[in-house]
Length: 161
Image (tube, rainbow, N blue to C red; front, side, top):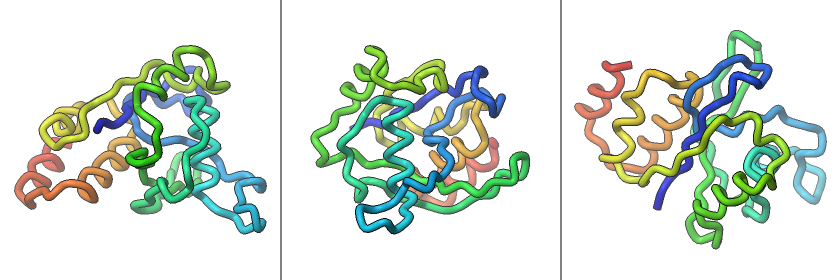
């Protein structure tokens, strides 16, 4: 199993470059369930389609960790990840879709990288300095929610940030 790490492009209007794992989408009035109920997971899945070209992900694959406030833009955001395990969608498929131009907003990312989803492989990425802040926080929450990690290891990671 692996996770997809993206590098935000300087060409997007946020002007923030660096690594991140977030799909950065505004909530649209059309981001609703078939019954017409607003659903943030629908917005996340729309964003994945727009930025990576992947569709067909079930909404139950979206896992939210927390909410944050971007004080520079005065916007709320939800942090989480999409767990593709059991969906039949492989990480290599996501990479191939992006490389073949199936994503209309591919310009938002300069680069994508697949990283093994195990604590030893992820820790070095958490220690890197070049992150979009909410992306780092998002990865940190994903690590805490997935792995059995000691308080000492959490302290070590946070102390380096």
